[in-house]
Length: 222
Image 1 (cartoon, rainbow, N blue to C red):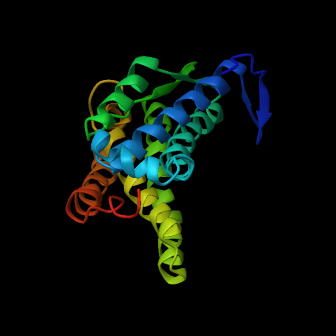
Image 2 (tube, rainbow, N blue to C red):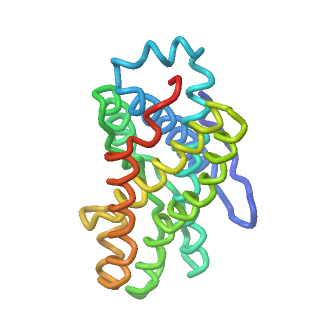
């Protein structure tokens, strides 16, 4: 893959060549990782191969990939609003861990972060951190009608896109709101415990119910 991407302005935001490369690499890696995760890791690779590889990967890129991209772009949008210089940087070690863990049937997804510099108040820091998980929760509302459309039309693939879009985005919201280490939850909690609870608790409950109890996203041909 060429790394000589030039910077460009997209939707009023400037993305450097390095940032575009890192976003692309992380998007592809997470698309692969979540595709493997939902088929049970190495035990389900045959299902992906039987489906032709391209379609399962496309579903991963449209669900996990889009959820990740918009999560990170949300951080950048709010940071730039506060006059920050903000760029996403991938963590190649964590991307490798995401793919490796998915092969074992579970997933740990911390692909990198939007780094920003400039003077900020705790509230501004908190709102930048909160923006990503909030976008993931809003994306759940986008994928719900996709699921219903797939069900009504009898399209197994479209319904799977809806299911995985919902499951992945509630998972990404809950995971990133964990108040630990570099995750968004620690920054949000440092700003406001009330805001953190209001965002974190529903995200966790939805993740447990939809992903771990109902198994949303684990059905389908791949």
